[in-house]
Image (cartoon, rainbow, N blue to C red; front, side, top):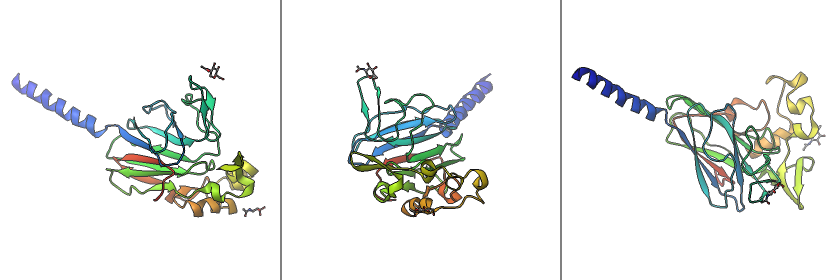
Length: 247
Ligand SMILES: *[C@@H]1O[C@H](CO)[C@@H](O)[C@H](O)[C@H]1NC(C)=O
Ligand SMILES: *[C@@H]1O[C@H](CO)[C@@H](O)[C@H](O)[C@H]1NC(C)=O
């Protein structure tokens, strides 16, 4: 009888360690911009992330969110938002319809994105990238901590609004507040990687994607940008910074 008890006790301990091994991934969101950013979060596969899916982050503020293994989703920053006391309102860039992004709602392009696929266990690799495929609105970077593997920095540190070609600029009050993708602006097969350009082999960098790529080499600049834009890391937590100053 004692032996059985001992056995189930050991099993319980083993189970607790297992639970720790698959513990949640922590995301710290930090606003390094000189203005308020309203981050939005979106689960792409139904695995929930903590928090309200949208909130204000004042300059210098941080917030911590956690997601269980298996989470796949995105983070972005909204700018120029106006919400009333019930959270109704909108943003000039990255809008999702309300302060708390409604279920399934992403940010309206042009918007810089951080994309994550978190592994089910700490022993497997997470995948993450910064994407400018839907354009750019605010600088954003991802730094891992405590993980193993490549764990490279991903980000777009440069201010693309400052070098955005005129034909891609989104203006508000005389200032460039976002930079559209060439696909969104011109909607051609070459820029959108559709039709005759729908495979990685037939969709090459363009004069516009090269502007994004040279400013932000570690970010996706168009749909079939090279695989070096995707980072991997196992068992890490992640710091997502808006307006990062260095890679
Ligand atoms: C907030 O805005 C929404 C949408 O315009 C409106 O329906 C609601 O009454 C407003 N609430 C307050 C408290 O102002
Ligand atoms: C990109 O190429 C197109 C087509 O040749 C041209 O019309 C456009 O001005 C170019 N834009 C830039 C920013 O080089």
